[in-house]
Image (cartoon, rainbow, N blue to C red; front, side, top):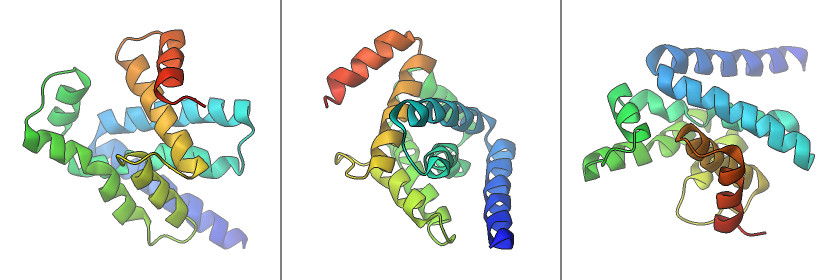
Amino acid sequence: QELLEQTLHGSIQVLVDVLSLVNPEAFGRSRRLRSYMAQLVGAANLTPRWRFETAALLSQLGCVTVPVELLTKARSGATLSPTEHAVLAGHPACAKELLQHIPRLEEIAQAIAQSASAEPPSEPLAMALRLVTGFEAQVHGGVDRAGAVQRLRTDHPG
């Protein structure tokens, strides 16, 4: 059991390290998402905690397929071409593909894809990931935290 746990943690660390090397912008976002998720998990008493924080940390893994310039352009608020939008929108599905065959990460892979879909998420993990992703995008885009929370309450009542 201990060896399996160490293998899982080591696998997650390798994936995060690869993301940091290939796409530092996405890596920075994944760290912010994990921090916000930790706050949400603590406030809402969500369990198991490691799943929520790992989902946030790995949610940007698909960005290894997205050029850094495109992420920078998107984060600046510039208009994206349909092709650029499609590339950017495809990163959660890529993350799902990369993660879904790793034991104990299947649910996280599914939540990452579901959190970015047009349909409202049905699982708590995907819902939490959608919320922290929206929050991070607003705060990183210049909206103060209180304003970001208010927008989330308006966009996601209940």
